[in-house]
Length: 51
Image 1 (cartoon, rainbow, N blue to C red):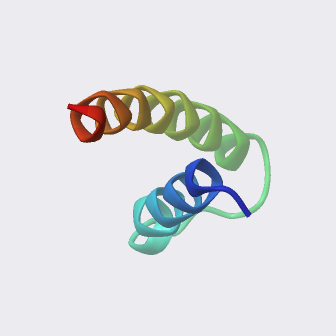
Image 2 (image 1 turned 45 degrees about the vertical axis):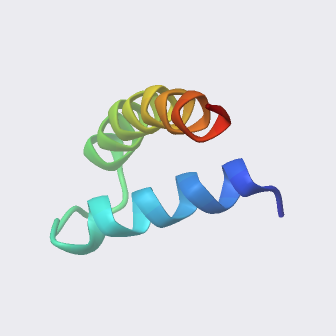
């Protein structure tokens, strides 16, 4: 598992920990939004740690 996968996985675990969403359209919609958000955050994280 790569560093990126670990980062995204940890973010999504935290993102969904307090949400009570059943498996269905709403879940996939939230998953897509969260994945887009975390990919942006990962790029910022990577830039910041390379300095």
